[in-house]
Image 1 (cartoon, rainbow, N blue to C red):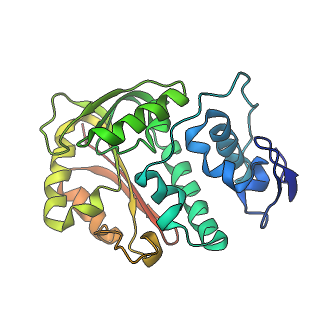
Image 2: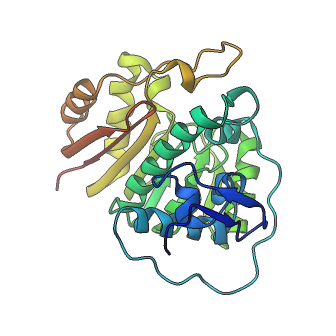
Length: 270
């Protein structure tokens, strides 16, 4: 799909102008509002993924045919953090930087070789769950039942399935799996509990299994505009890598976007 500086949104028909040639709206031919809803709609999500590939020089594939999925329920507070809505909105220009980095984190996770049986701990409203469910057989857990209902709706909207259950993230594994993912969780633990959680992840994984995570970097604009603190942040990148090695992982790789996100992956050795 070619870049278009101005266009009518393919989904809602709104006239739109892209900010610059790195603006994903111009590559996807979707307005900013529809692009923000990409995680909740299979057509919009497909356009986003194709736009990411095209912007990076890849080849976009054809748009799938078929009716759009059913409309999901209104976003919850967890979604507002990702979407920069409500208390987290900081204006179009500053929110654009956030969304570009969220796009980069999404592309990073999409490229991870997660497959087979996958567990997502502390999944919340399932922001990342459709992407994971497209990679393998997903079991989606959270300690709170309410956000899991939103996660269920999100998966239904994408015509995907997962095993969804209320579960304490610290509960001992009931089996070994091929992959484990968590988002916005490591930063809540602090240094002392981080070591214990990484040891738990190690026990979850089969030999050769892969752990992946996405979390928030410490940045004032990651929190709410009313001054609410974004919560504990993850350790610095070198310390995270060292913690993964101490927990017995190999092939560790930790990277960040410019301001807002840290992503990491590691493998339990054979």
